[in-house]
Image 1 (cartoon, helix red, strand yellow):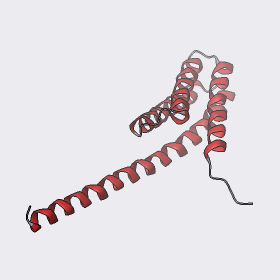
Image 2 (cartoon, one colour):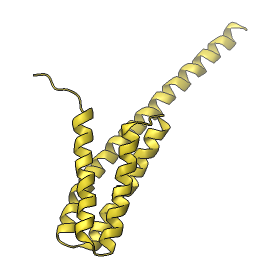
Image 3 (tube, rainbow, N blue to C red):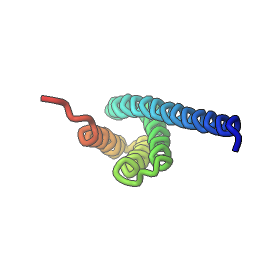
Image 4 (tube, rainbow, N blue to C red):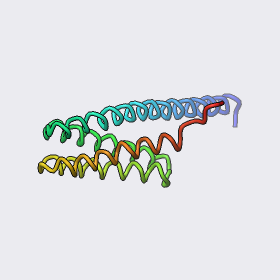
Length: 134
């Protein structure tokens, strides 16, 4: 193989490597945005349910279901099949249940489903957040 062909292959390989890192970084940045939106909707849905505002609660629940679905696909693409994937699936299922319950006027049931989402968020963050120095 000539020197110029080896150089071209090396440059293409380096470019592909940098592109893969940039794509991965974009996904991680998107993941952070999803987490922020899940946090916001998991709080506002509880307020809407306490006020018996079914349309707003259903909208929050559907948003939660969407973002948990994105998280689920994110973890599947990374090949993770442990707790993060399971928590994503559970969150999506709880959000779907909350949407159904709120739409049917079962505000207590929807509140319990939404409260489960909030508790799971906290448990996951407590478990996986970086340890702070003393």
